[in-house]
Image 1 (cartoon, rainbow, N blue to C red):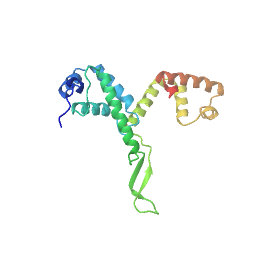
Image 2: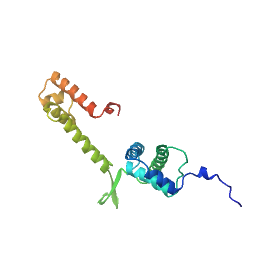
Image 3: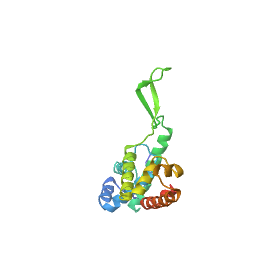
Image 4: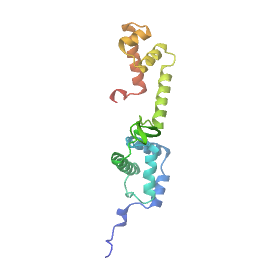
Length: 196
């Protein structure tokens, strides 16, 4: 049986040509690609933007994915990363491993022999770093404003309304004024916060 002839242009760029395209990208292009990867890797357990971008480039350079001719570089990368992330999410969904359950080999259930499954929060190191960065940005934004700082601490402890007023020793009018100021300050830190 003879092979069906194909148009070489429809097969895409060779790995060497892909390498040249990637090496010609500017620092701004790499930042754009990383931002695209960051928006696409949500919900993929254990992956961050760098992992997704690296996976896409590896697949192109290994010849596992076709780089179409004449398509803008960012479009090609975005489409590849979208596909890879989508496949990873599907794999995670059908995987027998639940990343939110941790097995502790030292804990046992009294009724059954063997290790016990314990629930965890599934917090990743990236989420911990992001949380610390957000707290640092909040403290920097509130530096020198003791009232807002104290209100932020009260909110962090889950105190609102009358409970916060009692804890802070404020009347309702002062609490309302400081609440509005803190809300505006938080909005400046993260303009999209109210839509999340």
